[in-house]
Image 1 (cartoon, rainbow, N blue to C red):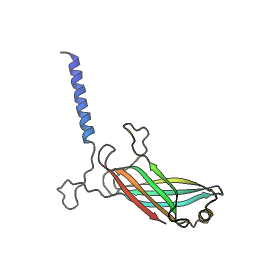
Image 2: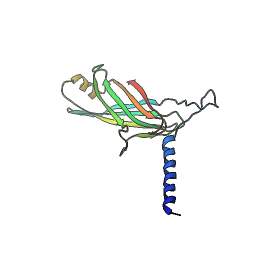
Image 3: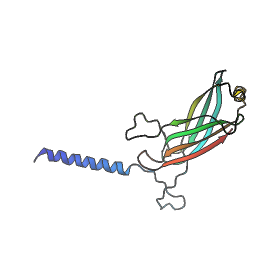
Image 4: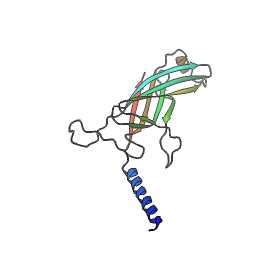
Length: 182
């Protein structure tokens, strides 16, 4: 027999196996609390806490603010946290004017993602996401700068966390909105 037939058959079998894996993908199934025989997916949403917000250093030209969020996964399976978008307000200065904001992590943008910046949060665990914010003093906000220097700033933080329940290729993207005042 021709050896090309065996090689061709092996390639076809590998393609079928890989295609089956990609189509089904890993999934997260949790039995319903009410009916243990059902296979309905019941997933608790992530919990988010504002772990820390503090002024690390301040000068006449700039201020560095440290912000940290604790994300808790109450589910037994892993969750992929893609991004956390947040907005920072100093409420003593102005209730409605945002003084900073940012994004921690990254969302997939194309077919091939090099250097992905997402976080795998294992079941019933937590992670701490933190970032330093550098504010430049324009001279137009003396009350804000006085609040930062005296450590009397009152904060409001809002944002959204985007996460998947199982993997980047299966499951749906979930969004959780949060808001904190301190």
